[in-house]
Length: 204
Image (cartoon, rainbow, N blue to C red; front, side):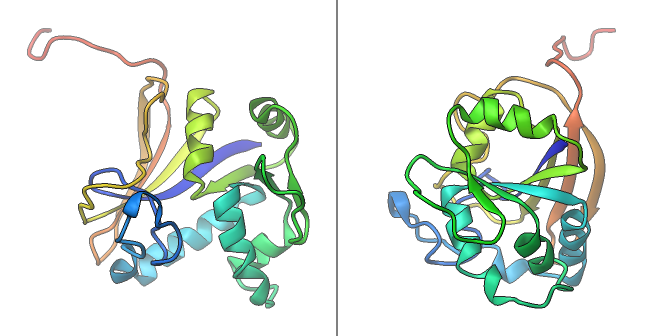
């Protein structure tokens, strides 16, 4: 399976607590829910299209608990987001959770990197990561991300957990798709393009 990451970031790269004030207040973060003013039909349609490509989900503990507290209440199997989330396998990266009670949810044991590599080797379309900021740092360092779907919101937050924290592996990425919603959100899709290349501007 291809490992894809869908995440929301501010112009200054913050991804903390995009959905609501109570999601993650750590570090004194006070802007939880900063994506809410920028919702649009076009942005939601892209998210639906991405969810339709999933065969499994990989989630960090915090994102798993947020999702598990909300999406099981949406019982319509035809709901384009709740349907896949409630039905498909969900793998949780956590050292503290003892059990995962959501349907088809399983806590990964042992080496996280080894477990994810094993999942990627299975047959299927996409192993999708949504949110899961701490988990993403591990995936970045291990070079396990095959595709980024980054939603860039027109707001600067100044502080908070950032998508590309310390330890990201230097790499080049190809922009393979780009859309702009009426509210000014940029939806960018990137795939690997090998190592970083350097040179001198102006030289041929």
